[in-house]
Length: 309
Image (cartoon, rainbow, N blue to C red; front, top):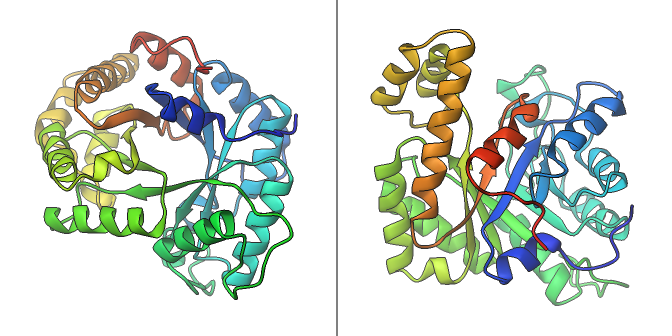
């Protein structure tokens, strides 16, 4: 299926709906069946599906190719694009090509440093950063020009997203950084996973006071925990992650399948709290190779039916 219209995710958000997106990680190989299987799990429970771009700096099927597989299933993709692996020429070329193939949403990221991935000897690029990428896409879309000022024969009318982490320090700078991305032209934000609700509420309060929540759609990140070990790992080994001790202790109180159930309960409770925060316009679920659990989570959170019209 090729999308001929505008972004449906944009329509949901602009219409006042509470959007649900989920992440889909492409395989470390050319087996398209994996994308098809994940797509079938997500198809009827979200409004759009993010496809990661060599996440954690590990070589996988390209985001562009995986997005096309999802389009064939009737799923609206959000193509993630990192500046780590391409210079500005390749980035702009891929944006134009993606739009020509029916992709209407993209998420602009810098990407995990290659030293953290499976091929740390790889050369990085970082010709531009994620904020500059947002600006470039905005100019391509709104002014019909590439970064050299050349008038494009057909503008890529992308719905432009970026990521933000309310849990990195200092907190005050996180709002400044959000404002920079909005000034660059971002339309929607997907945040780091939320476990520390008081911190997230404070970040949202600061964003509201600056008038930022009136300028951008904010989707809060959700990752269901599977075990106490996972919670501990995310708290101590994943940069920028904030998992409170109370959450870790709660997960440590259960084992095996009950731990998975407890992680889902925490996620459901968190979603309920997020829906009550002014300015939160949706959630973004990052299940981390557990996409099959997303339908149950969305249903239990009272967010069906999906996709919204």
